[in-house]
Image 1 (cartoon, rainbow, N blue to C red):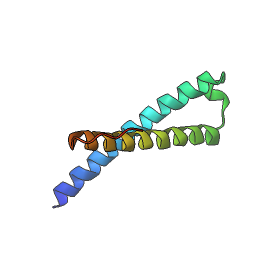
Image 2: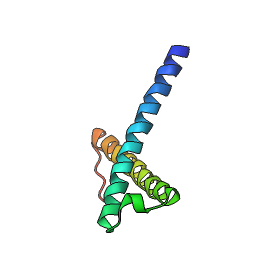
Image 3: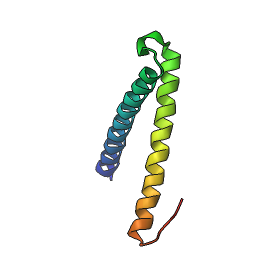
Length: 79
């Protein structure tokens, strides 16, 4: 049982790292699009932008998961 829990924790950690990396990439693009340099922002401001991007990614993944489940069940959902 301990091996299963350890494997689960490893999987969750990998997921969080990939999510964080993607959020950092999106945050960097968002900052450049606003005409600023990431180095010009404070640590707190950068963390806020990255956290916002993480929240957006989680929301997108949840909605895509629901759509995939509905498609697997053969149901249609029009938004």
